[in-house]
Length: 372
Image (cartoon, rainbow, N blue to C red):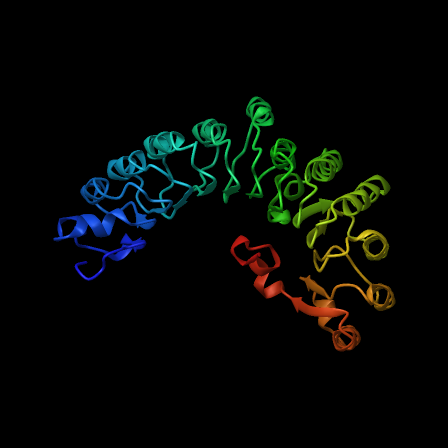
């Protein structure tokens, strides 16, 4: 500590000493901009740090205890320019209440003027009503990045509240295990700056449980994107094989000229191979006709089927555009004739990269930390 005149980053998860008692600690600790800690650390450590560490811009908290840590609350309260906040639950308890989060997030609420990055992974409990989280989300009007990594189920009343909330500076939206209408509502009030809309499509509630209104919700989502996201670059999307949805999807491609990458899956419970081929062919034709100039990557769900002839025609028509990266979870595309075709177009620099990711399903979905 004596040798370190300026300390910018501190990971407290493995520190056992109360470093704020060390000689010359004040100058060193005052310069910390980024702090990572966990809730098992005694509150006294955080009370001590809060005397000096008041200019933290990035705070990452790993919650491994089901009891509130009042020292962390104090540390949040004293920050003067907190911009980036992450909270991740990492414990195995089957029961907890919002009391666990209440004080910490009420303290965070007071940082709404400076906070522009919020990333939350709450431990999921059946039938738990995260009312507090919703109420606080409505206060963070300056967010540029909003990531909610677990279930945030909203009733109709809560959804109406969310529809009224405006996020004029939002650029990245990543909400998992949710309904399309929740995502659509945030998109509608995003201010037109969204560049990344990311989620795991197979975990969208409408899709997973076969919602009767899925087609309507999918149409609404597509329209909200092309009406409100002229700068979109990365997009997760679910579509049904209807003429109207394919038409609206093509309209999205034409309007969103900054689009670089799509992760697209098809809601098709009929599981008819001939229909899947027809839908796959229609998707490829739309991409050839209407994909933006800078479009460079597509991730296909295994509901889309492409015959060898379809895929060759698509790749031939793509020739002369940006090299295309293709990702799939369907093993058919690593079989003999498909492999030969793909390698041919790699040599011709039509395909930049091709990956079959079934055994690495998490890599099929977008990882926000890997995107430019």
